[in-house]
Structures are given as C-alpha cells and as structure tokens.
Amino acid sequence: MTRQILFILSGILVLSVLAPADTFKHRQTGQVFHGFATQTQRQGQTLVYNAGEKTFKPIPLAEYDVTRNKEGRRDTVYVLPIDQPEILLSKVVSDSVAQTLVEASNQGPLLIILDIDNPGGQGPYMRTIATAIANTTNCSVVAYIRGEKHGGAYSAAAVLALACEKIYISPSAILGSLAPIIQQQGHEEMQAEFLQMYSPDGLAAFGTYAASLAQQKERNAIVARALLDRMIDVVEVQDLDGKKSVINVEDRSTTQRVLRHLSQVAEPIGPAATAAPTIEATAPVTTGRYVMTLMSTEAIQLKLADKLAESHTDILRDMDAGEGRIMRSRSIEEPIRKYTTTKRNISQSLANIDQLQAYVDELQQQIGGIEEQIRTGTVTREYRQGDRGYRTNQDRYSLNDPYRYWDPYSARRSSRDRANRGTSQSQTLRAEQPAMSPDILYGQLNVAVNDLIREYRRVLSLAGRFPGALPVGLTTSALQQRLDIAVALQTNLRRRAVMMYQQQPY
Image (tube, rainbow, N blue to C red):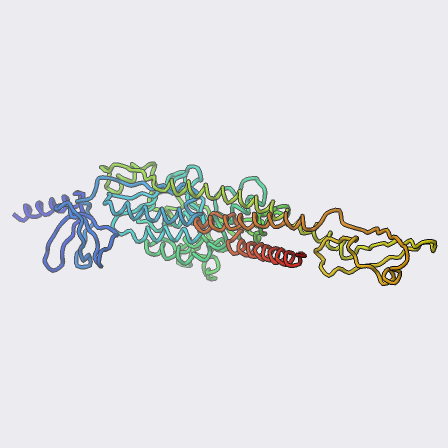
C-alpha cells in the first residue's frame, strides 16, 4: 500500500513537471488556475491570462504563489536577434528592443532567446535593454552567444547576456571586452572611431551595474566588470591552501600566487594627426591597458556562460521546450532602417555645413579686406585755374560709415575750393577704390548664413529624434553652440541692413 501511494505521488510529480504550465494558487482561498502573467498593470493589479477561462484578467499577483511549470502557455519560442550594431548605438532602437521583449513576454511563450552576435555599444542603451531583461520575470529569457559575423558578444553586448536567466554559447563564439577589429591592419583614426563607438572609455562607469547583474546569477563579478572596464587586469591566483580564484590583480595579497593572466596587455591607440573630424575635434582615445578575450570553454569555466549549444534545438531541449515553434522577431528592423536613414541624412547635412561654413568664412574675409581698403584709401585732386597753372594735393578722408561705398564725385569741396569760387577752375579726381562694393558681398553672406542656420537646425532636429545618430565625438551641445554663433551673425547682418535703409536719402 505504501509503495502504491509513493508510486502515485511520484507520477503526479512527474506529470506536474512535464506539463506545459504556470500554476497560480491563492494563498488564502486555495483557488488554483493555470495560465501566465504579463508585465501589464491595471489599477495596481497584474494582467494575467487564465487558460481555463481563455481570457485576460487583472489580479493582485502578490496574493498568489506562482509555480513556473508552463501549463496554459503558448507553444511558441521567440527569438530576438541582437546582431545589428545599431541596437546598442541608438536610443530609439534600444527602446524598441526593450519594448519588443516586454510584448513578447506578454504573449506567454515557452521561452525567449536573445541571439547575441554584436561588437558592443554605448552604456545607456545597454542598460535599457539589460534592465528590461532583468525585469522580465514572467517568462524565461536566455542568451545564445553566436560566433558568426562579429564573432561573439563584446563589452556592452556581453552584459546583455549577464542579465539573462541562462547563457548558452556556440563552441566558436567569444566573450570579451573588445571586438577583434582592433587587431586588424588599418588606419589609426578608424580604429579610434571603432573604440569610441563600440567600446568607449565611458563604459567603465557601468562596471558596478554589470557586476550586480553577475552576482544575481552567481557569476564572477570581477570578470563582468572587466568586460566594460579595460583598466582591470583579471588574473587567476592560488592561495597557500591551494584554493584557486579569479580576481583583479590589484586585489592580490602577498600570499597569493598568480597562475595566469586572463587579460592581455593592449597597445594604446591615439587619434591620427591627419584626421579631419566633422564640426569639432574628437577627444583622444586609447584601448586602455587590457583586453579580455574568453573562448567558449573558458567562459563556461569562469561561469560567464552555462553550456555549449550548437543551435536553438540544443537550447530548446535543455530548457524542456522542444515542442515550441520558433518565431523570429522582426519588429526592430523598421527602427534600424529609420536610424540608418537618419544617420545618412545627418552625414549629408554635416557635409553641407562644412561647405557653407567655409563659404561664410571666405565672404567675411573678402568683406573685411574691402572695408579696410575703403577706410585707408586715398583720393588725389588735381586743380587747374585760368593762367595760374595747376597744382596737386592729396587728402585722406575718414568715412563716417565704413560700409558705404566711397563716391569721390560726391565729396565736399575743400576750403580752398570755396575760397576760389569766383575764379574759373577745373578739377580731376583720382581715387584708390575697391573693385566691388561690400554691399554685394553682404547680400551673398546673408543668403549663406540663412542656409547654414537651416542645416544646423535640421541636424539638431534629427539628432533629437534619434539620439546616437550623430558621428562619434560630435554632441548636440557643440552643434547648438555653432548654431548660436550663426544666429548672432545673422542678427548683425539684419541690424546693418536696417541701419543702411535708415541712412538712405528720401
């Protein structure tokens, strides 16, 4: 009888484990139903799908014990690709990825797989996606690090994996702090730009965040920090009692013996002297002191990954989701397309700005030369009076309005000329005059400045809608400063036009 009871209980336990179900049990009433929770809140309650009633309804989720056993879930597995570099370079795209993750979890799939093959990116966008992953507790989210186009997951992209419930890695994939492009032949300015874009020094500020994600999943926090902070030299040490550990070399005690360095020394790379950055100079960049590159087996050994996986099939089998239909998400393709289009438009506008700024500078230089010639030019007068012969005299005139084109024929008569009004005389004037009136150049300058302002405002508008689309080293504050300078020049030109109009004779 006892054996029969044990057999029945063990059978129930096996069925409960194998059944595709999430079970909700009310702590006070004992009410039980199957389904799945969403991340949607309504009036302080969580929207939950009830498989028996086939409907969504809000419930006070804190009053229920939830057992993750998949019953009532959809027979689907969402695959969310993190293989486009733009994902961690654009706020719009990273926000879209985070939103897609939430929406996918709300559909009750068996599993969500993040396919990661990415060179890295910017810290704020990394945290947006990683936080969304960590907050997705209503559905299992795992990472699959591939070794394809980019070779694996690096810096910010690697931290996304740390936020997942499990990390699977392809045998050929790499987990590291810097994508392998830095080891290739190429121009130094191209390598420096790559660093600023995919592994900037600012990532070190997110080291504590990466360490906290690792600790929550019982992973090595120092190695997690080293993925973002290239100033950390990770070593494996052995204590006097033979115990091995992985630490920052700066934390090593005198009794610990270094067995091996997990980080490699990297040569610093500075900006090329011949580089011609757009709008403003970029700050010097270095690779830092160390680069960490972990092969798949090393990543598993250091608990930065859990298991090897050749394909999604291996992951589904290990996660007991073999019956799931794989659905590859394409929701982020449109934001990426808009982002790349915006980057292209910004690049074209910045090229126009460079040309317009050069033209404005040239016009200002020409105007300055003409006005200087007007201010310092001389007028030669030749007088002839009857039989008294002739004489010459040079007079330098200081103009009240330096912008007025000098007309020697409208000059006032000299005091000597007024004294000899009654005498028959003639005069010839010879003046050193500029070849062109500055008014013509001022008109051209006004048009060029208006075009320049329009391009600046267009770039700022695009950058505001798509943060991260500006070239590396260029900020919106720098663009705004340049715009303010152009607007000030436009204001001065308008004031001059008003002043010239008021001085016109009626």
